[in-house]
Length: 542
Image 1 (cartoon, rainbow, N blue to C red):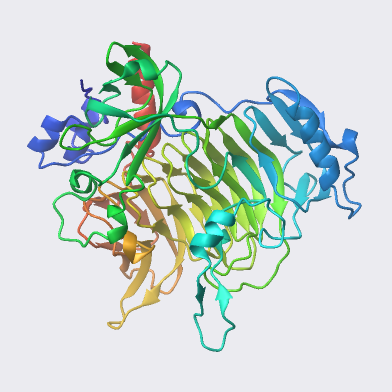
Image 2 (image 1 turned 90 degrees about the vertical axis):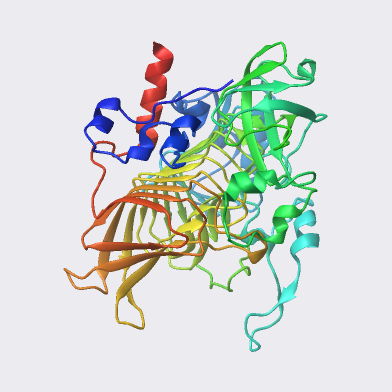
C-alpha cells in the first residue's frame, strides 16, 4: 500500500515558480520526470512535528530544597542528585528546577527516566549556569564508556613531536547530561519479525507475525547487507562511487528507521511515519520492538566548561554538554553551551527537537550539534558562534533529520559525515564565510564537506537536500566576484535548491546534484519543512 503526497502547491507548480521535479513523491511521477524525488521531511521533531514542546512539564522539585546554593563556588552535585532521586520516586512527569546563578557539578547526570525535565531560569546573564569543571575523561563513569574504550583506544600521533595519545571515545560519545538508555547502541530489541512488504513513502507495512507487535509500540526497522546488498542500491543508486567496506558488516544494520505503530489490522501495520526505503524479498528488512525513554527535556539554562587548550582532532577530553541516546519525543530548548568539545551529540534516537541552541567559545570544538544513527530529529534555530570542526553534522546512519533556521558564524560547514546518512535536510540555513583563493586565484569556500572515515564513504546517500541556503561572504572576495561554493566528496543525487547571498555564487558539488535557484531564493516556499508539514496537517484535517 502506498500513498502519494503532494509536496508543492499545484498553483505554484503551474506557475513554474518551483522545480518541476518537486511536484510529487509518487514513484510513477518520479519516473516520468527522470527519477527526481524529494523525501517528506515533515515528520521530524517532537511528536512527529504535530505538537509543541510541553511547558512547565510535571511536578517541580527545586534543587535549593535539597541544599544546592548558587554562586558559592561549592560543588552542588550531591544536592542535585538528591533532588533527582526524590523526583525519580514519583510517578508521572517531573521537573528538576534550578534557580538563577552558577552551580558547580562534577558528575555525569543520567536522565534515564521517561517524563523528566531539567529546567533553569534561562541561559542569559541573570539566568542559570551549570558549570562542569571536569571532562568525561576525568569523571568516573561507572563503565559507561568501557565498550568504546575497547574499540577506540588506538594509539596514534598526528605529529612526531606530539606525545602518543589515546584516541578519545568522547570525540563522538557521551555527555555530562546523558539522556536515555545505555551506550551508543539500541537496547531492548525483541525478537525480529521479518517484513512481507513495505513501499518507500508508505506508512503501511506487512509483517509475518503481527501478534508480536502492539499498537503504540516503538519499533526499529532495519536493513543490512547480510543476505543481499540491494539496500546499497537504494542508498546510492546507480553510482560509480566506491562504497566503503563498513557498509558490508552484517552484524549491524546499514539503515534504521524508528517509528511508532499507529494501528494493526491483520498483517497490515500502520506506522506514524513513512518508510524511507522499500522492504521486500529483493530488499530484505526486519522489524523489532524498541524501548526508548520518552519526554525527557533540558531547557532554559546554560552549560559551561573551562576554557582549556585544544588537544587535537580525536583527542578531545569530553567537555560534552548533552548526549541523547535511545530517546524519543524529547527536547533541548533555549540552551547555551560554552567551551564544549561537543554541544549536543545524538545517537539511536528519533522524533525529538533541539530548539534555540547557542554554542560559544574560543577553543575549537568537534561538533556544535551532531545528529547520528537517528531519524526524525529537528534542530532549529541553532546558532554556532564558536569555531567548530563539524558545524551542522548529519553523521553515520542519520535519516530524514532536519537542520532549520540555523546560523553558522565561524568557519561553518554542512557536515555530511558519511556512514550511510541519507535523505536529510538543511533548510533555510545562513552561513557566514571567509572566502579562500584557489590556484587560479578564484574565490571559493568548502560549504559542504563529505567528511568521515573512508570505510564509510561516500559522504552521504541519495536525496540529501539543501533548501534556501543564504551565504554571507565576510571577506576574501570582491563585491561583484563570483564565489565557488564547493562540495567535494559528497553523495549522489543530492538536491541543492535555492542558494543566495551577498555575492554571486557558483555551486561546484561533486557528484553532480540537482541544482536549482542558484543565486535566487525560493520565495514561494521559504522553508521546505514547514511547507511539507502544513500540507500534511491540512490533508489530515480534511
